[in-house]
Image (tube, rainbow, N blue to C red; front, side):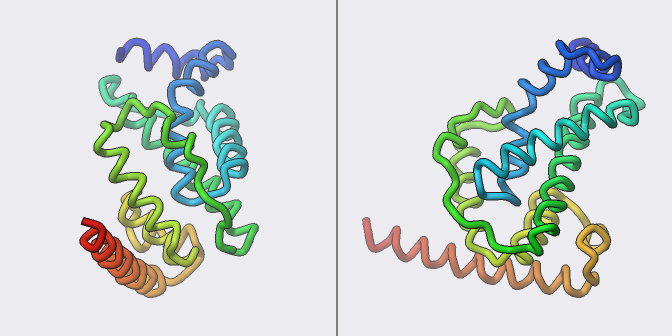
Length: 191
């Protein structure tokens, strides 16, 4: 598999459409799920994902991994970062307006080779709760908790202060705890 990943990346560097399609097909579901944490409109999320892949293919020459055995891990991280930045760019253009509409059920059926069935159920519940957060809280929560950014990085990317980032995270966690408590209450009542 390692040789395959390196061959695919090198094919993308050579602008070979066959390898670009292979990479796109193998990472599309992963990339779309990353984008869905930020953009909940299905059509917009698809568009952002495709825009992210275009950015990836235009910048693939800059992708470097010193250790060939880590190529897939670094590739996942690089694709994830491109998708997050592309989604945030759209949210900035929309001035962080809340997303409207539900998440299409078909999205959960997409095969992501990195997740088990149990992880997908937990992920679906988490995304549904995070969707309820105000946009500024949601973005900081996603970036800090799920995507592993530090507050200083979040502040730089979103052009906010580190204190605002920390405050938004605290408020997001408080609201999520409230949502969890409500869900537990409903579950207890239905048993």
